[in-house]
Image (cartoon, rainbow, N blue to C red; front, side, top):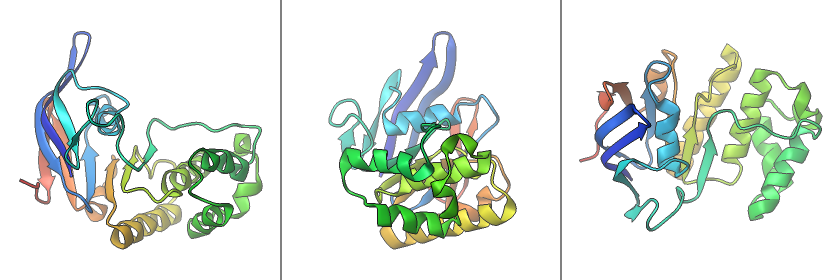
Length: 215
């Protein structure tokens, strides 16, 4: 479980979040919605450990971020459109990332690519990719090491209707199969079909608009 205990976040004179107290339940699909500039990506960065609360604390599975752990444990993360090396193919990029932890092989990468109809694109240079192709690459990268926490910023952006359906089914299957905790931002109406729990950023707080919060 991810616990926000009185979390506030301020950038100079801009207060984005004030005294946020929520619990994000494990094994659930939790969506964060809100207008542009409301702090959706910042909230994900706080969960991952890329950003630090101005006050309050975030506790993941009983361990406090920035004290007991530096980053979300075994997390698959895609925030703010991470880029890859343009001169390498999709597969070459993913191989380089896989070498860091050495817990995924090429067969695993190709299997994931097949699930999102991306196998043929793996052999193409990343610099030739469309927005939708880049989005699928980011998803494969986030999923390939079988994370316990999947943190995704606008994962359906740039996808056509069929690709969006395939990705949604893939995420549903992964969460169901592994018990992974999925936290994602989204601005489309489909969020209410996908997510078990939906929070809306409203006046520097997180307001529950679908599902139940863990007490």
